[in-house]
Length: 104
Ligand SMILES: [Zn+2]
Image (cartoon, rainbow, N blue to C red; front, top):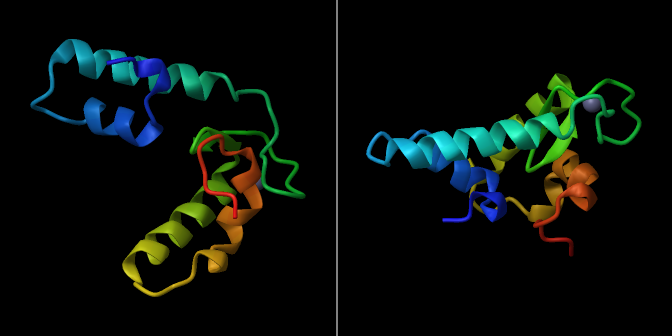
């Protein structure tokens, strides 16, 4: 498996899979760390936010506040069937920075 092109979700799944080979779990973890490092020192990508990047959401650098906001929104989005994609207001503010996201 080419870890450099795997999605963050795939990497997390492998890294936390106790049945996966240790070598793969290590490689997946290392790749996740490298991707986080690539956004260190940049500003949060949420519009209007001047905070420093502390973590990532789908490879987009965010501060803790906006990461939490989007995480909570996403959890709600997946729980409630019927909620429209367009209503994910916080996620949609950073979607242009996500390389693999739907953009309609
Ligand atoms: Zn922010």
